[in-house]
Image (cartoon, rainbow, N blue to C red; front, side):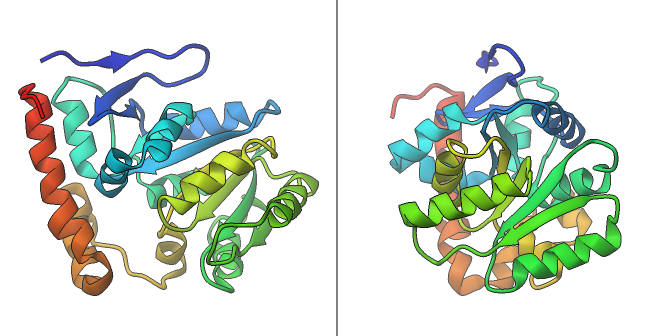
Length: 259
């Protein structure tokens, strides 16, 4: 089977194909180093933290699928994506949102990174800021915000963009659901010279509002089971319907069976 590696120019990451979605060949540390480099220019970028759920949503949403090709980085969050890369002999490592966020904040001292938290329910972004101020005091957190539970109006987009620019943010962590966060980042990156990173439930993980799976479950691809048991009503379709469909489609792709 061919690796299907897609090389990109300049400072972009090489990618491999997962059901028509480009996933970057990266790691937590390499992604962090890219963020530091990107903070030195005035370009707006966005980063997707991709799991099976996001891959499957891109199968039926052409707008979402196209945004993956415009992203500066699409990290492999779910272990199935890591296994897909490793099965092709690629040096890819799991780069989950919670792990990337902790690593970046922890090593931000002296890098010039200025962080902005935007997402969660009322008060969660502030709680996250206070949490990281204690455990990573070297991180420069310049602003927080909470989006409404609907698409932002043009006036709201302009207002939050102005706030991010005024505070000098160059890394903006977006903590809402997929695909709303991906569409929002695509719009904000046109207005703000920063890197936007969609981390979904990571805000709740780091504030302790949602308990993350034990490390052994994370490493063995069982984090989905922990989340399903924690929130069965909300997540049953994601893990009991979309995940098996993903496995079937990956098998068809691997053996090049026409669909």
